[in-house]
Image (spheres, rainbow over the protein chains, first blue to last red):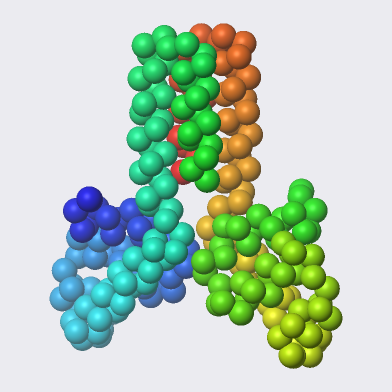
Length: 109
Length: 109
């Protein structure tokens, strides 16, 4: 399991297009630029609590999208298979072995 | 460009988890089971127009999700690269050629 910040970075990467502009802005400052809640609150002239609530809601939305679409999960599976594929090719595996792994990779979609 | 029915089948496949149960039901009867609007209307005891409006709205939602997430577009690109990869392997290409195509494949995400 990825640590929370890394996981949120990934989920944000996959699903940010489904968020509102304000959600994107807060998440990006908090998770990518490492702003504190207080700094974001000051920047947008709102309360620290408002920023906190917004970010918590957005995190729940991102997890909700991941539950439904599983883009991060599939990405991790694909990344793992790609690494195994590279190893096979470096080890000069037979075409049959490589093709069989390609079949597995294609079935992930 | 895919024909409309095939495209909707794909989009439905990728994004159905984001639809309501009713939207899923109508879309699945209309696009997968080839029911007519009239048959769906009768099944659910609603007007043909209501079914039509619901399906049109759902189609627009699916296109909206595709505009944002591009899952079908990336799937098509990946499928194309996988086919080229298979050809390379069948032709006993060098490991360098295969690895270079794998790099391209990985960059799609």
